[in-house]
Amino acid sequence: MGVIRLGYVHARVTDLEAARRHYGDTLGMRLVHQKPDTLYYKAWDEWDHHSVVLEEGGVGLVKLGYKVERGEDLDRFEQRAQAFGAITERMSKGDNLGVGDGVRIVLPSDHVVELYQEIEVVGTDTGTVNPDPFPRHLVGVGVPRIDHALITAEDPGTVERFFAEVLDFGVSERVVTELDGGETLGSWMFCTNTPHDIAFIKGPNGKLHHFAYYLTDWAEIKRAGELFAMDDVSVDIGPTQHGITRGQTIYFFDPSGNRNEVFSGGYITYPDFPAITWTADQLAKGIFYISRELNERFTSVLT
Amino acid sequence: MPTVTVLPDEVAVAAGDGEGILAALYRAGFGYRTGCRRGGCGVCKVDLVSGEVDYPATVAGTVLTAQERATGTCLSCRAVPRGDVVIRLRDERLRCLIPFLRPAPFPRPDPSQRPERKS
Ligand code: FES
Ligand SMILES: [Fe+2]
Image (cartoon, rainbow over all chains, first blue to last red):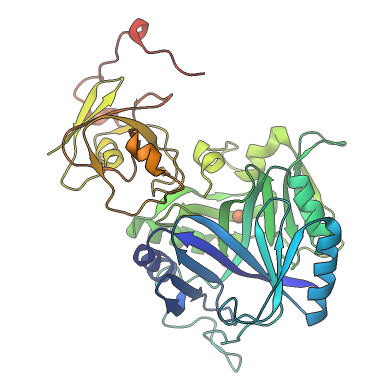
C-alpha cells in the first residue's frame, strides 16, 4: 500500500528533434508514442506505457508522476494532502496518455506531482517468460529505467515533511546547517528500497535540478560517459562518486539544458532505515565524495 | 569570418561559419563561467555591445526574454554572430584555459583601468 515508484517525468524541451536524438539515440529509450508537440518514451526494463514525456516549448519540469499500489491510496493521499494544506485536484483517465484517474498535487515547493494507480502496461523489452538479461536491439547507453528526480525548494524541510506525512516516504539522508535543530538544506527520500526516489535541495521553488536513470554499475557509467563524448552531450561533471546515497554518477545536460544523471550503486533502504545526516560544512564531500568540491555549474544550473 | 571581441579584455577570436560565440572562444582556448551550454539556464549571458547574433537553436523565452534580446542581452552558448560582434562579460573575466594555443600571454588591461566589478 502506498506510493510504489517514480513512474514518469514530464519535462519541457525547446526542440523535439534534438530531444529525439538525445533521449532516443544517445540514451536509448524507446519512443512509444508521439504527438505533434509531445514525445513519450519508455526504457527497456520498464513495463508501463511511458516514463519520460517531453513537451515542446520551454525548459524545466512540468510534473512528476508517482504510481500508487491501490485505488484507495488515491483517496487517502488526497485527504492527507489537503489536510497538509496543499492544493489538490482530481485528474481523469486520459488527461495523461494511457494513465488512469488520479490526484494532482501542488507541493509546498510549487512542483506538481501526480499520483495514479492505473497506466497502460506494455511490458518490458525482454518479457517475463525465460527472459534474456538485456534486449539485443539497444542503442546508445540503453538505460533500463528512470530512477529519481532532484528538485529545488525554498524550504526543503517542509517538502520533506510533506513526503513523510502525506505520502509515507522515508528519509535516507539529510543535509543540515548544524546537527541539533539546524535547518534542513537538502533531503533524500525513498518509497522503494533505493536510496532515493525523490530529493530536494534548497533553491528556488518549482525548478528542476535533474532527473536520473539507473545503470547497473560503474563500468556502465564510464561507458555512458564515452557515448556522451561521441554524441557531443554537454557533461556537467563525472564520472564520480557520491557520498550521499553512495552512488556513482555522471551529470549531463539534454539539448535544451535540462540536467540528466546516470546513477548506479547505492545501498538498500527499508522503512526502518536510520536516516543519515550530513553537516553543511561537509556538503561538497556528500555530493562529490572524491573531489570534495562543488562545481559552480552543479550549484547554479536549474531549469 | 566574423570576429568575436570580448571586453574588457579586448581579446578577439575568429568564429567559423555558423559557429557560436562560446564555441569560438573555447576553440581559441578561452573560457568564462557557463552552465548547461545548451541554452537552458542563462548562466552564460553577456552583453552584446555591438553587432548582431542569430539563434539557430530554439531558445526558451523564459531563459532569454524578448525584452532581454531587445536590450542587448546575449545568450552566448547559443548565439551565432551574424558578422563581427563585441561582447562584454558580466561580473566575470575571460580566462585563458589553454595557454599552449597562445603565442604570448594575452594582454590584460592595466588593473587601474578595470571597470568596477559589481560585488
Ligand atoms: S550555459 Fe546554460 S544557457 Fe548558456
Ligand atoms: Fe541524482
